[in-house]
Amino acid sequence: MATAKKASARKAAAKKAPARKRAANSSKAKTAAGKTGTAKKAAAKKSTAKKASAAKKAPAKKAAPRRKAPKPRFGEVFLEKQRQALLAERRRYTEHAERYEAEAEQLVSEREPGDIQFDEESGEGDSIAVERDRALQISAREREEIAEIDAALARIEDGTYGICVVSGKPIPKERLEAIPHASMRVEVKSSGPAWRRP
Image 1 (cartoon, rainbow, N blue to C red):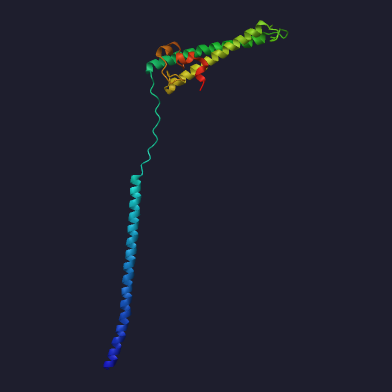
Image 2: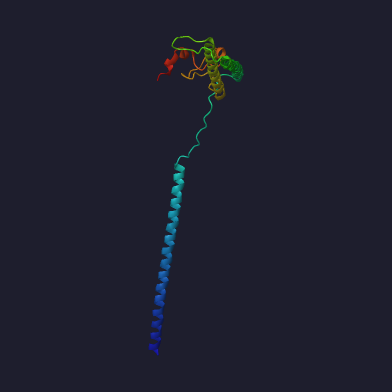
């Protein structure tokens, strides 16, 4: 009977041993899993910290500064006076150009079919053709003046009025008062086409 008790005790001990082993193994697995989870969390924290420090170190992109219009050289009163002078000049030149264009058209319509045509070789020609050419040339000059006036008005608007378009130097106020559409300094204008050379 004592032998039977010992045998059953051994069996119970044998059963407990694997259970202990299993419990030990599961606690080891839990510890390993816990360590792995902790390691993953630590790695995630490090990664986040690195990103944050990189974001701090990276210079923030600044918005491109807006380009300010150049400060006008003259007060608003002077500029308004010049604008009015330019507009008056523009009306006058437009009237002249239209009048000469109409005159040229009238000369053509009044020409009789049998009138003498201008002959370049002999140098002979009729006065109608000469008058018409002269009227068209004057009209073209007036149109060029109008274009210069329009450019001066645009310079008033963009704040560059009174600056030489070639040298970039200021045009004297006296010159602008005499010729409101002046776009160049006297010395640049007087040098003629030379300023166009590179």
